[in-house]
Image 1 (cartoon, rainbow, N blue to C red):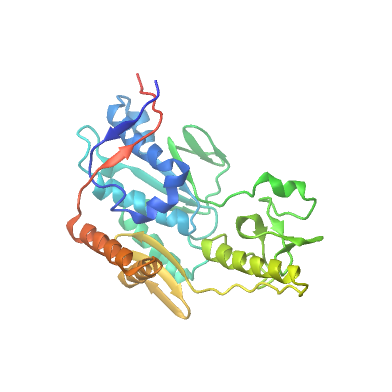
Image 2: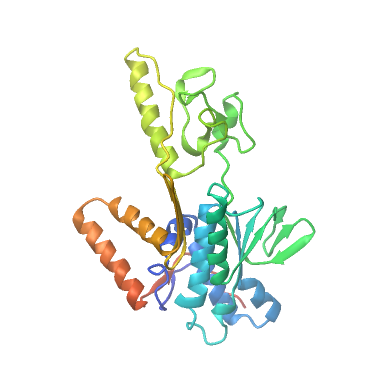
Length: 313
């Protein structure tokens, strides 16, 4: 039978703003919540351990923020919600195929982020290339990590449409665009964001993050207007205004111009940037007040698990 299932517990998402943007759209939030619920009812010790193991694949900003949020949630937010299991014993593993996490950040900040993750119980493993993912395990070559919840943060593949264009693509199926973001051989068409690879500026592809896509979208629109008016298009140039990644409560790393920030000051900078990106003073004030109150009071609230659910026997 299909229905909605709700559970009243401590505040889950108010305490972890980073996880909201990372997983709510993909349905992973529901999987995370149900993993704890299933573990509470699971009599088999090995299966319960697999249910309480969460593997995050990809050590970029999304993976780091997600792993940090999961660590905080298990050890603080829902630590006393379950009488039969101990959520603080959840095993959270962050896997990165490269030599360090946050490869786009300076090495000193990568080390700071790794130390912050370890402090909240996250196991960080670098040089760990995932070769296979099954319903109950992640494989690193011949090594197996039993886990019932795997969160993929190692990049995305382009939509299949790109393979019908007859142009050069990278391994992820993204178009290798011209300097003005047009598709090779089709100056009347443009590709932006996760659909393209732009490496003309630095020799290496730009990161697949929102600021890049936003600037590319505006530039492509301007070039469309130029073509319609008979003017030549302009090459795209990305303006890097800095990079940030939150790790947990009062912990973050940031690169803003020549400044490299970590810890509380980086977290405050992240908070300021997000507050100022909201529209209107009222929205900014309300969000700031709610975050401040949740921070100092560890305020408790409700969480919901919605959607189809099949109970275990």
